[in-house]
Length: 368
Image (cartoon, rainbow, N blue to C red; front, side, top):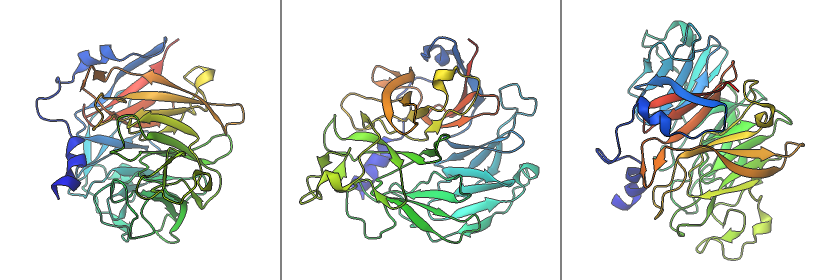
């Protein structure tokens, strides 16, 4: 049991191990010229996934037991208050909004809070949309979002570092109808995706995947993947980063039998809630490109990640051609004061970033 819990415990910052985060820390964040970072909201405990309501309210999932709402009624780029929408949930990491309803993903079920904007402070009771997901906690927290097809997409991570899962639904990405019917798997061999988005060019699904641990400091790479057609297999647990056979499960397998990454990312950087930038505030070279928050390594001898990276695509929008740092500074030496988790493109074109170590949501804007 201790061995199974160790990776999860190491993801949590030790009390007193890091400097206290505050407004002054923002001065250590490095961004390209013309960009600025500020706080959209603070004191948002364990801020993880982000979703936007039609009225501009931002909803925040956590790996604790709460879901928050951050209204910005005067549109000044800073939340007016932090409202606890729901509590006593089981790691409600995933949040999504559709037709005025807030969908929340716990480990084993999907909840729906109808007419949420009018009920923020009413302790609303949810409707259970689907409750047949596995209840395993290892990689059990979910990232959810609605696709261009109107279906709700839900990953189910592997219940281990590396294994042959006993149920076919593990290490997959799935989708179902908004009413909870019609569950189907669209991608296999996905160890643990906690972030995905659809290309604004051709509507294909792109997703990040966290590579396995215990193969060394520099392998395997974490991955950015593109799902060209439903049913594709991305290699786990047989092949990692598209070209490394697993020492236990890869015997007799060929890497060519699986879909390789669209881009290899850093080893153990833990890429999470990626987004295509579809706003108009940032300069043209950033539009329709992929931003990836890298939560950061937990078991690498020298820490890596703790930043936001940018993957640029070619003119077709199908090929990744470069990978670079966009925002850094949350890691100072071997000590971190923040860990980016998820992104959200706002109507004004600014980019929100959640941080579950600094317990906040940042706003990145561009002034030229």
